Length: 169
Image (cartoon, rainbow, N blue to C red; front, side, top):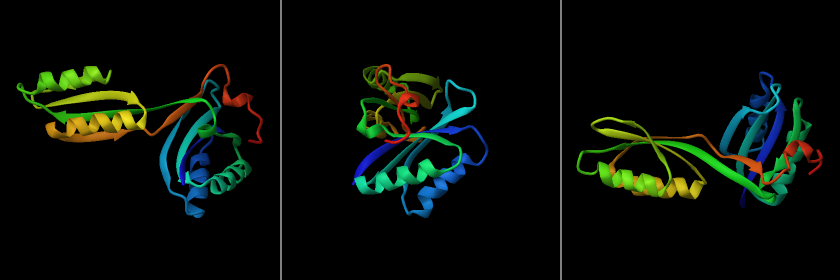
């Protein structure tokens, strides 16, 4: 079993996301991460789905997703040179005594402090899954109050937008 990152270009219509996630659910595949947003074209959205399965299963998933109405393109980003990122907001407890230590760790990870109160600090971080998980582990001794993560997003490296790839992968 390995992690597969699917980038799916779809027509921006109501119900498309439901049909795609329903397909995964009906086939018994758990979605590890899901991210949806607009693209450079107003009427097209990009859905990034992370699923853990074997190569045969991902081939079947891709074939089934390609058959859905409103799906324009499906690309397994795991097999391409790509940039993968996730956004995370982490709220950490802090005091006057440990605030400097937290700021130092934030700087090392190139994260941003976006809110500060007398008792907490909210940190914004982008990076790969391992970077975010490492940062969260370092923040645990300070007391993590909340964590929210966007899910993985991905783009092919270089001048190769996925709309230029053929429909058959």
